[in-house]
Image (cartoon, rainbow, N blue to C red; front, top):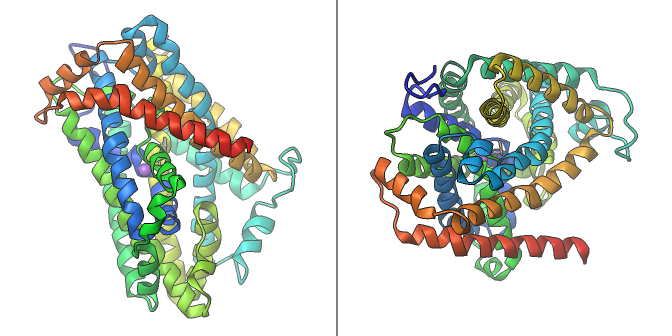
Length: 458
Ligand code: PHE
Ligand code: NA
């Protein structure tokens, strides 16, 4: 659907826009990264740096990205061009570097989830999910350059992921992305609530939950805990990619943008916290059932989803397949609603610059995405994934966020954006917001970057 006055694609409703923004934000990271970070970094005490990072970096920057997209009325490259032609590159480079990497591996992981959805029905991983995942399923080699054969089940699932991405993106903003998220988000909530309540009824669940949340305040003096909190906030809110800029540019004029940013951020963090109960309840059950200490069953990210969870699912006996299907379906849904947001950021950036029609563009990008993703279906795939993930998470997003703050805060009249947001939103931003964008965020983000570099070099 295009606006009659502006010719730009638009959301059908503000709810649709917010659901799409939440769809982008809520992804694999909420389910498998947040709970582990919390557990690792002081349990309940980690919520303090996490909340501070949310309030001082996540929400102000999400407001900034919504403001840039809505006020300048364009996807990231066009919006930065309208800030100053000198800054147009700032819209492009996250698209070309960070996002390309992310969408390729993100889609490959969604493909694994689809495969595991099917494996769940027969508990195909047997007694040793670890060896099943690394040796039978991925057949990982020791060098990223030893490509080896392409794994068929992964290839087929990857094709499915890109076909789904393509169908949604080709249909456009309202009938595609908005509609998909109106189905996916309620579905994801129902799946997650079912999994959380189910997990909480299992024996030993409370051991897990207490490990997840029991505060260890001594951790708060460790600077790395704070760096992790800020790093997680960027990734979790899909900031520094231009996604939120593109999504906001599809919002018609009268709309409470500041309020939408806050709802999106709170829903995303709420979802993380909620799913953490499920993750740790299940790990607690596994620990009690096997008589293994909790710290020995806890894993993060890929290890959590493809090794620890399959193991626990097997222990559920006849209920295992149902649990597995629900879990891997929830990962798939959370993943797809994020992957489409990345593809859309590309489409809108290119559409705004060159007069290429959307269908052609979406088709080319999805073909390219599928072809590029093939690297992650090879035997060296997991190693590539770690490399790409490392650079994107530790540098890509943070550098982009830092430059956004500098571009708008120092080389543009930030009050233009703030006044605009205040005009369309009920919630009024004070000048404190300017201070955060101009000073606080650039300082925090520089500290994080320097810290990462030092850790790398020393
Ligand atoms: N926000 C997503 C998550 O937490 C990750 C993501 C980042 C998705 C950027 C799309 C774009 O999993
Ligand atoms: Na997220």
